[in-house]
Image (cartoon, rainbow, N blue to C red; front, side, top):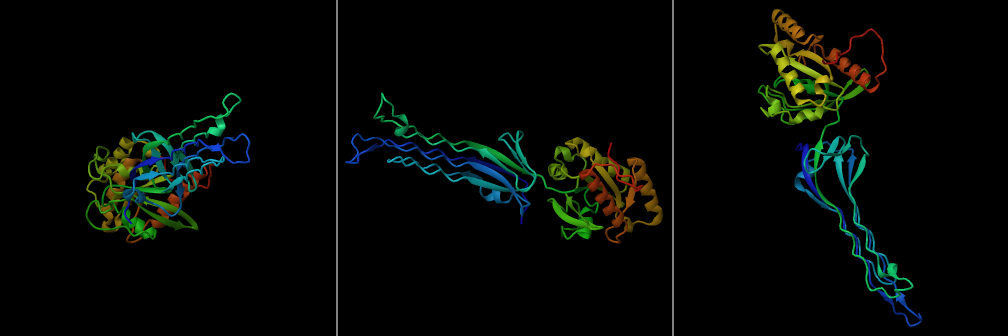
Length: 346
């Protein structure tokens, strides 16, 4: 399945049905009179977050959605049927924006969230509604009210507990494939990962979701490389797992580059808790490893975990650190058990 995280959609609610102009003409009714029924209400347009979806690919092939028009009223005081509603089903984590792609209409971050985005038009009154002592044979009825028509943008932000960030070829996809059942593309060239991926990791009977996004490079916030368009998928996470490859010539600069892009992007990413790892350490000799570890600690002023998804060094420590940070974010009550926890970014 292809991944699509943004779509432009045109929606229109149903028009209301027109009221009827009708008169009773039964032979046994002495005076007759108006008996035109009301028109039915037009259908509404709803948007709902459902389970089983993790992409907006359905809206690549269909962008126009229209609810049913209400049925016109009829004689003998028969009211027209209401038009059927239409429901746009989207993954949890989808945001709905107005046509300017900036004004947020709603944020459906939980399965079952449902929001009406366009109301159907009311049905018109039939002429039976207009009879009075001074107008006993009204010959007019109301037309139905028109529905609402609007253009909306759907923007998906994946629901994950932890997000993987780093430069291209930092080992993010290898880590994800090692600790989860996800099978991202892995190769020894930059930007192997072109779309975000999700995987479920488990440690000590605790499960959490990890999101992997394409690597960042300097200038990503200005659109360099793949840019920062996928950073929105880690906005909802409790913690960022920042991988710095031990194969980088200057690990300190690599760390600062990614941190700079997170700060330039904004939206609170730079303030999230961060777990920092020196990855791919299996390819380093002892002396080089010690030098790069010291340089990374000095640049970040944080605890650094030595990690290798190939030799599995540091995997347990990393997963436990992520699990603790996620649990602390969901239940912020302080816990003093004497164990190390990821530092919040400053």
